[in-house]
Length: 65
Image (cartoon, rainbow, N blue to C red):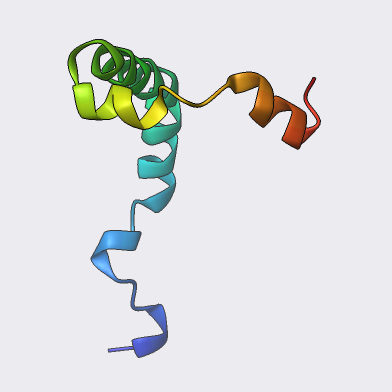
C-alpha cells in the first residue's frame, strides 16, 4: 500500500461537488431572498431589528451612492 496515493473519501469527488453546488447558487440565493422577504412580513422580531436601518446610510458608508 502506497500511503502517498491515499485520498480521503470526502475529497475524491470535490470537483464534481463544487460544480454541482455552483450550478445551484442562483436557485439557493433566490430561496434565501424569499425567506428574508417573508421574515420581514411575518416575523415581528426580524422587523424590529431592521426597522431603524436606512439603506441609504449603508450605501453611503460603503461608497455605493
